[in-house]
Length: 169
Image (tube, rainbow, N blue to C red; front, side, top):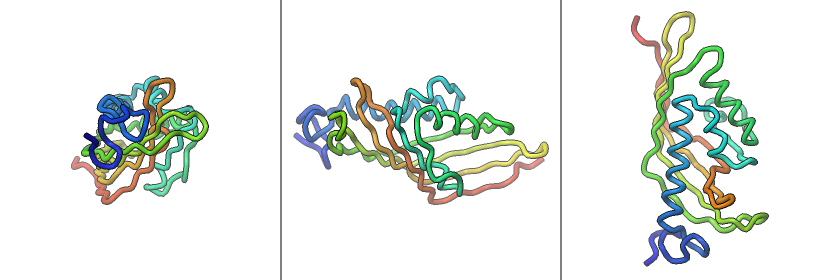
């Protein structure tokens, strides 16, 4: 029996649906990205993404419109979280809406989209004082199976609310 919007067992990820294994692999690559980012395991960050990944996550905060490519994205997130003023971060992703979205026009591999409710907390130092950010919103992502492995090929962060402040001394 097929579930909502292209989710179900029929086709096992080859026709018009995603199998349970496909869904779990997509959830796992999303979770792995958050884990390696928050623990600053940069060698593990790039492999969560396709070589041609596009990220529009910084645009939500007034930054670069797009970062393109696995290496450029890894360098950008490393510089953001582990640069001159290191950031301690905690990212959570919840209640994903994952749907099959057809085959990639060049490779023929299956693709999917996902929307994840997200919450993040960040802390960093400015002139010896701790600054913080607490944000809520949604990640809008695309996934593509490459050589049998689901990877993130696109990400856009849409923030709903951001609170910022200074920690008490």
